[in-house]
Amino acid sequence: MHSARTPDSAPRRTLGDALAEGTVLLDGGLSNQLEAQGCDLSDALWSARLLSDAPQQIEAAHAAYARAGAQVLITASYQATFEGFARRGIGRAGAAELMAASVESARRAGAVTGRELWVAASVGPYGAMLADGSEYRGRYGLTVRELERFHRPRAEALAGAGPDVLALETVPDIDEAEALLRAVEGLGAPVWLSYSVDGDRTRAGQPLEEAFALVSGVDQVVAVGVNCCDPADADGAVEMAAATGKPVVVYPNSGEEWDADGRRWTGKGTFEADRVRQWQRAGARLVGGCCRVGPSDIAALAGRLASSEV
Image 1: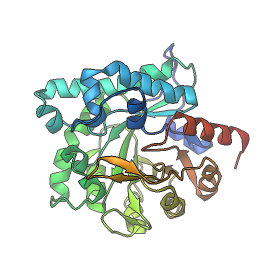
Image 2: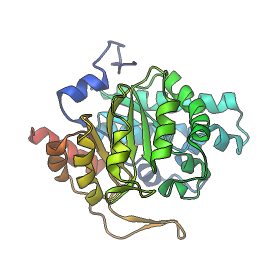
Image 3: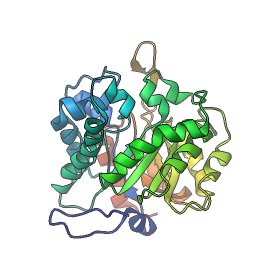
């Protein structure tokens, strides 16, 4: 297990140690911060394109969240895959270097704060590579074994870069969750498993109790929960995830809805920092935000965590 390091390379607590002691604050949505910095994310690679084209923008976005008080920075590798980079003419060696660079960028951004901080390497779902919105539906027509073969090489590349944890995130169904858990076996890195949900079910319609039960007895999993969902859906999901006995991870979207046809966000944001107290009481130990949740929201969460021990 890799441990976070200070600028002088002194070893620090593992993320698992920190979760056993209290609540740890995640960052917010990387894409919305990059857009706020003037970046164009219309490419199929989304934020992963900037690992090659504008790495300084990635580091600046991470730094914005670190300054806001985030203790965990999630890398820009959600949509980084060997297949996706190949479509841009980047070979396997180059793609692996870019995945490693995503970890290094987050590490550098966090180190300048002088605070204890961890790096989570994002392992997004198969549908993210397709860039057609299918990560919010799941059920790709692939077997668990086929999905495992897809995920294993990129998980190996990311784990080899030395993150503190692999974030298996925005997972839409149980089949892909099972494939991801198989793909990370033996890589020497702890993981968290986080589903994207609709109500009390996965995006593919499976009961969340069954989805969360996959982590039972899997020591490599340090947290289980939800992300990239409506804040109201997150409220109930935290309690169900806590039934596993694992620390719960929760980082919902702003509450706005993504219009895939118009490629824009619609509706009103409902993300409120005060929700963190309810999440903590229900068992959440990793809390933060996903799409459209920015540094100001994370700063508000940091304030709530600092002012109230639950």
